[in-house]
Every structure is written in C-alpha cells, then in structure tokens.
Amino acid sequence: MGAAALSVAATQLRVMGAAQAQLGNQAPSRLPAVSPGTHTSFALLKQVNAGPLNVGYAEAGPADGKPIILLHGWPYDIHTYVDVAPLLAQAGYRVIVPYLRGYGTTRFLSDDTPRNGQQSAIAADVIALMDALRIEKAVIAGCDWGARTANILAALWPERVKAMVSVSGYLIGSQELNKMPLPPKAELQWWYQYYFATERGRVGYEKYRRDFARLIWELASPKWKFDDATFNRSAAAFDNPDHVAIAVHNYRWRLGLAEGEAKYDDLETRLAAFPVIGVPTITLEGDANGAPHPDPAAYAKKFSGKYEHRLITGGIGHNLPQEAPQAFAQAVVDVDRA
Image (tube, helix red, strand yellow):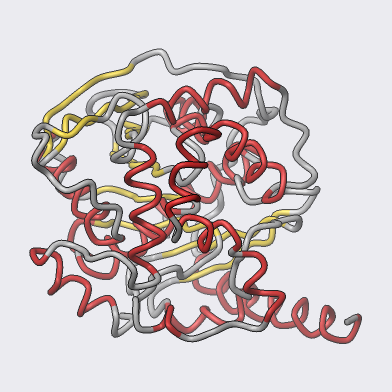
C-alpha cells in the first residue's frame, strides 16, 4: 500500500508539473483568506423559467461581471458555495448558483414532465438556464453531480464554456460502462446506488431523507466537522417534492434499471464515447475524500487543453467547495485567466 501511495503521489506531481507549465503564463491573482462557515446565506435569491423548469438560484456580484455558474451535487445544495460565491463576487464576477432539478425552490413547470435524473437532462437544464439569463459563455465549476454536469457542458457545448473547474476530475458515465462489475471493495462504496434500485430503498429515502443525507456527508467527508445548523441549511433543499424521484431515477438510470427520455438519446450516445474536453480546466481533489472517485492519473488525458490538477490538503473531503472555499474559488479565478 505504501508503494502504491508513493506511485500515485509521484503521478500527481508529474501531472501538476506539466499542467503548471501550461497554466503559469500569468502571475496568479490571490483571493483574500476566508474560513469555511464564514457565510451562512446568500443575499439574493431569484427564480426564472428555463426549459422545463422554474429554476431557483442565488446570484452575487455585479450584473455586468464575467459570468460563473457553480453547480452542486447530491445530497448537497447551493450552500456548497456559500463561502465561494462572495469571494468571486468581490473579485468582480457575476456568480450564478442554481438549485438543480429536484432541489430547493426549483420546480417543474408541468406535472406531465418526467422526473428524469439522467446526466444529459441535468446538463440541458444548465444550457436552458444560460439562455434564460442571456449568458452566452461562462466559467462552469462543480462538485459531485455538478462536476459531472460541468464535464458534459464542456464536452458537448464547448462554445458555451470559457473554462472549467471540476472536483474529482472526469466523471462522464454511460449505462454500458456501468454494466461492468467492480472489485468488491469498490462496489461497497456504491451501497446506496443498489439501495435505490429497490422499492424498499425509494421508500426508505422518502422516509429518512435527512438521516440518509447526513450519513452520506459523514462518510464522504470523514474529517469535516460540520454542525447541525450547516447541515440543516442544506437539508431544507431536500424537501422539494421532486427530490426523491430525481435522486432515485439518477441512480437507477446509471445501472440501466430506468429509462431516460428519447430526446436525450443523441446526447447520451455522444457521451458514451467519453469525449475529450478541450476547454481550460483545473481538477481538484481533497486528501480525505471518502466518496467513490477516480485516481487523477486515470483521467488526466481526457483534458486536451490547458490543464492542471490540484490536491487540496488538510483533511478535505468530498464537498470540497464548502470545506475549502478559498482553494476552490482560487481555482476558478486561475482557470479563467488561463
């Protein structure tokens, strides 16, 4: 195990060294220090009709600033970026932080719309939001589902993405790939995916969604000492009437146990080829990420443009933007200057 760890560390250093030669053309603009938990809320929350949704989102910074869209994951919400957004706003950016479908104040406009959680549907939601807000091009940054969504946007709509920050790297998936079994220890990390594949799991998540989310937070970020108030601010977003349906469908779709929508078939076919991403990218990983995540060496070649990988130390887990907001915000500023 020690030899393997040294090998991984050496690989990461090589990846970072090569990448820094690409991204180090300009002197970095350092952001002010901020401690996690400094902010507890967003000053401005808005709603806008976009595609099949009425999207709830936080906005910060000048209206004419460079746009940045920050995407949360499961089971988290916009508070993943509660300390990141003010830093970027102070730096002059227009920061948009939307609730994904099934979270917070985002609602479907029609009862007849399928409660679809497949990866391309969530990405299409972000394009619809950009159109509704008249944002032609933006820096996209994300964590968990949000990182996968950022990857998809950069791969399929590169003309809309100026640059990208992605926690845990390249996360685009396919149903075909997910048919392949993993070693037992790796499968164990996905226990909740198999739980959601059952009716018992759906009912259990409906009944115990807050207990479930807290357990995931603890497992995914074992060294993050979040308090009840921090958790409860995010857990309120899971009271969305479509939350359980979206979460369960997402994981069932991954395993091929639920159908997607035909209108996304072409997008999924393109994603199944695992396209290379050409926009400037910084990938991040916490040194204490307890959630399933790929080795940085496994995805470095999926980024053909300017690229850097950063390992964020200090016991940082899966919810990296909330646990290490300054490091995440700095990556956004740096990739924008690439």
